[in-house]
Image (cartoon, rainbow, N blue to C red; front, side, top):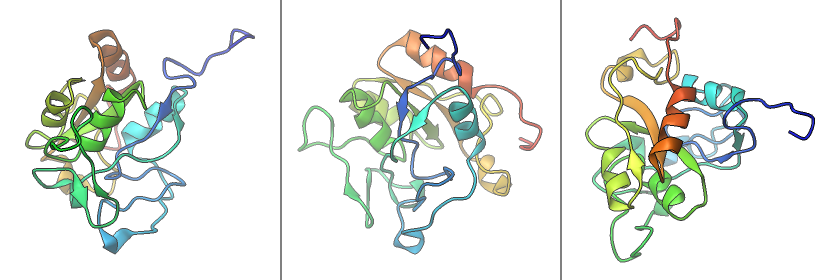
Length: 180
């Protein structure tokens, strides 16, 4: 940065991609003991874009098993609690860990995904913003999981609207590998 070189809008941002989609070199459990210890060889399309824009992946954010459920807990990593009251839920769905991490300022922004409220509910429960994009706005999923891409969309989470828009600008756009 001192030399005037930047990899993009997320240059140097710590990120903890959701433990639902693959992140190269990182364990991807999908919240299930079936996949505990499985290290991914490739990135999901949205994670490729985040890395290319300068994000530094430092860990994963917690999700319910297979991204399904009314609360964010799984048998691998346990329960994610609400950012402001640990006696309460972090919100239903797969983006609970991401919502808490943004609310607690562990991450400046975070990726989310939404099938039945998995991005919107944790955002609301943890007092941050989450945007459920329309189908096709953000390439979603690995290229070999086309079936699931028709049910869910990817989108950004942030503490304010400008940061939400900045992350969306990195995430959004056509990807010919993903037909939907």
